Image (cartoon, rainbow, N blue to C red; front, side, top):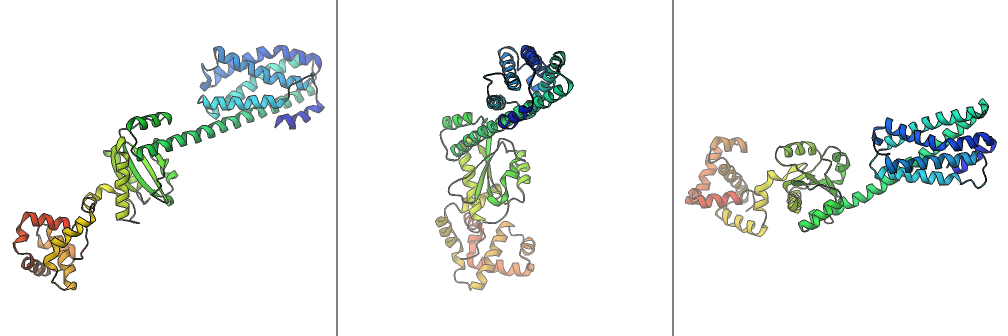
Amino acid sequence: MFAEDKTSALGAFRLPPGAAESLRHALPEVAGHAVAAIVAEVPAYAGALTGEMGAKIALAVRAALGGFLNLASRQAGSAPLAASMEGAYALGRGEARSGRSLDALLAAYRVGARVAWRELAAVTVAAGMPAPAVARFAELTFAYIDELSAASVTGHSDELATSGRARRRALDRLAQALLTGEPAPAVAAAAEAAEWALPQTLTAVLLPDGARPADLLDLLDRRTLQTTVEHLRDTSVLLVPDAHGPARGHLLRLLAGHDAVTGPAVPWSLARHSLDRAVRVARLHPAAGSLDTEDHLVELVVSADPRALADLRALALAPLAAERASTVGKLVETLRSWLLHQGRRDEVAAELFVHPQTVRYRVARLRELYGDRLRDPNWLLLLTVALATGDDTV
């Protein structure tokens, strides 16, 4: 830091007593002019450094430059420059908390340094300092201001990192509150703590770790929450706000190729239901690429109670039990296609890649086995549900 490296650099330089005294007298005016120039030239500070705040900043500028002048003139009892650096560091943190950007802070330093040196130079020349001494003083002054600037940059970055970590923790607590179904008041409090506006709907998205969710977050709504769930290993969970209606198609296009499983858009208070549905589809189709749970609603319904489905299939396919094993699969796939295509033989043949005559033969055999049940609406519904999963075993 400057307090160590630049103090030694000042060893070969000393302000003449008269020039040092003139500079100290000029500091209040120099500081005031520097602050005024910053307000006028840096938009982020327009109106921000007026009144009490402006007076405090002007006083800080005077203190920082005064400490440097004291050391440069070897005034007894000079405060170490480390104190000025600590002040500049605190200034950077304060500017980050105020929401001003690093670019604005650096611009303020540039403007302030320009104005301060212009006026300090005029004072040194009027005090009769020779040109080489003025040049050396300028070099050390700008080096000092660079160190102040660097300390403020560090403070600004540290504050953003600290506040960023705190906000990430708050956002993660919010995501967990949503996914565990905490009461609405608790979720609202968590959202307020995270400075996150509750949306109309949330859509849960499952992403394997290899999908690099950080890359996707740059493309999604900036309010998207990212978290993990204990029972889902190697998987990230995203909660995407307001991806309902036409916005859902846009979301699915962004997720294409990322092996994502996208749950339904639900009111934010039901976010866990979107996650539950995405998890169920992911388990039904492991390693199946990008999936939209809306495309699997029938499968979700018929697989909700595996034991009941097994009993239903046993009842529906009982008439085939006496057939040879090699025949059962063909009859079941034909029956499923016949139900889906409402008995249109040519469409069934096209789907199964067989001759229409083969379809005729198989349907005739099914009619023999099922009899009038193939004309009973209740049995047609039972068969449709039983065969919805695509499992051809009896």
